[in-house]
Length: 306
View 1 (cartoon, rainbow, N blue to C red):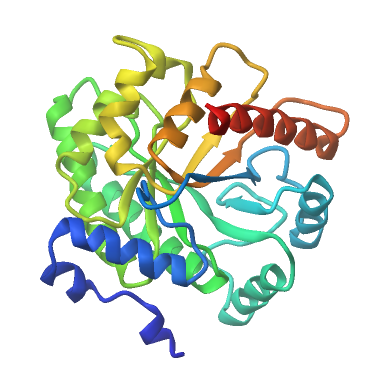
View 2: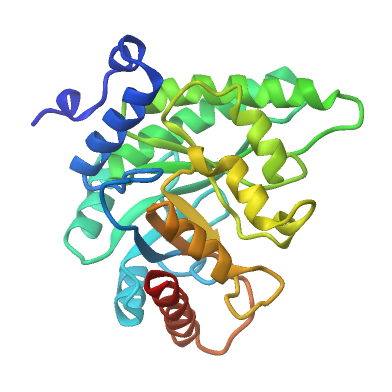
């Protein structure tokens, strides 16, 4: 099959309704080995535990990363970019290296879930916003080339000199551009709940203006998501636009309701990757990763039993 036929045409998104487009996008992504995003009401939830390199995997090259994840029985990986990571998967790698990276994962039991970029769209300076959009497009193409299914981006902050409504509209406009671009490559744009513009009520306001179905909300398991009317209320604000990844942090931290979040995801039949993002100093990162996987397994088992 050619690269052209593997992609999802932007024209397809413009000629069918938004609801149908979400379904078409999810089906096509699943056929390419990615997880369909959002809920699938015809099947039970299929939540998988994965790992994002962030700090624990910062100094692991790809063979080491694959070997350590295999030891830990963690079979999905998101690669953090733009921070001197040993895996070296960055915008400037050539086509041959991109093919090599893709093959390294395809020849292993570890799925490359996507790329976690630091691109953000809140800048008061329009030139910086334009640059961030172009970089994000580059990462979308890179993710496609190395076999991933989506890229993480940030909203990110409100600024004192800029009305909140203007920042929300600006972020949404950037996401609509990126969503249309990502659709051509069968990729998701995963907007993580990060920064002062990343609380869940603000994410809802942003997504109200995002018409591209290839854009979804990536939960970040933050204690602030329990504010106001509580976690379940805030979760419900965005549950109809969830992406196929979310980030977990220390699952032993009782400041965040991990059991409730998992209960709600199972209830809505969410299919995706719950990716561990950790920076704690530990003597053995592989052993610590195993411990976190086991805690998540028990949490998920309780939700499925309920």
